Length: 198
Image (cartoon, rainbow, N blue to C red; front, side, top):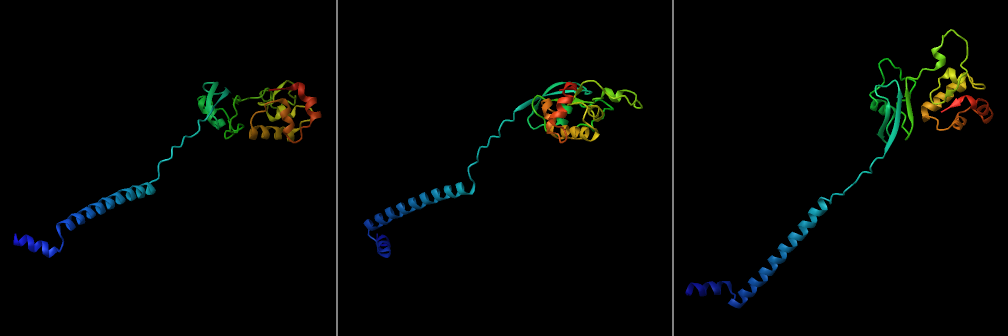
């Protein structure tokens, strides 16, 4: 009993004061824990931002007709943005010994176009020593330089320009697209139109 009184006197608080002190301490501890948890949660949220869901756009499919000297000619679905090399690969690749140097393999494909591999002109199939000019109808998307050169008003320089334009920009979609080539005018086109085909 004396020890208890000494303790009470030593601390200098009455029992009501002690209860009040305990109550205040509990409130302070609860508030501190609350602050700790809420600020810690926001700090974590600031450190690691919420992941952003990114959906890449679905690439559309284009159809390409691969013909000529490839392992499996046919129509192939390819992703938009594919190149000529991708179309030839889809068709199993060029046959052994076929020269693809005349084809721009890096050109981006357009839906519905045809890639013709290993085209040999009828003119070059004739005797190379022969000076006879090709007189038939030519496909402007497959014709060689000598075939274009055989057209009235188209010399070797313009023939080379036509082939360069075709290699860089893809196949001609209309006969009139030849007008986009420097040196081919409306009068020249009308002169040679009867010999042209797509």
